[in-house]
Length: 158
Image (tube, rainbow, N blue to C red; front, side, top):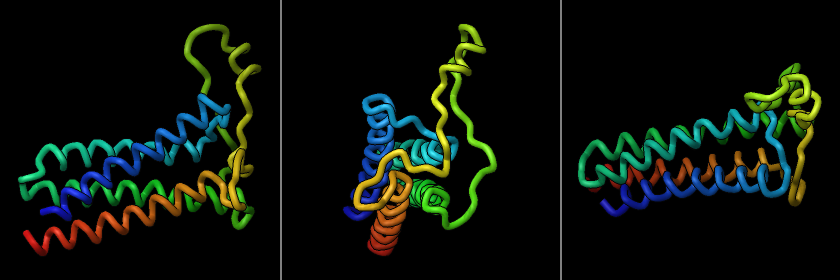
């Protein structure tokens, strides 16, 4: 059962770290997310919920499907990130329009005029030529595969 426990912790910590990094980038460094960036966050949130439930039921056989669900959620975020990275690199066309979040309350026109314009086809930051969406793809896809392998190993030993 050590593999399932390890897979559960990885399924919790990986999306938490990626979401934490995205929030630090947004609120700490002004890297405002585009619509596709926001799409990548939702599966990570789902993965955290699945992983917490799996860790809560760690001695139950029901923890394995929850860990698998978390891994598939992480993989979904990674695949969205891969698509987004392809749009940023110009490999294919993405959305025809981009969106921004407008805070509730206050003057709507002022909110619209002062909202940052965030394009989905421009990487706001990159390291070694890889954008944030590209790193999400690499880390999420690799992490999901590792979690699925650990879950399969744990299932065989259970």
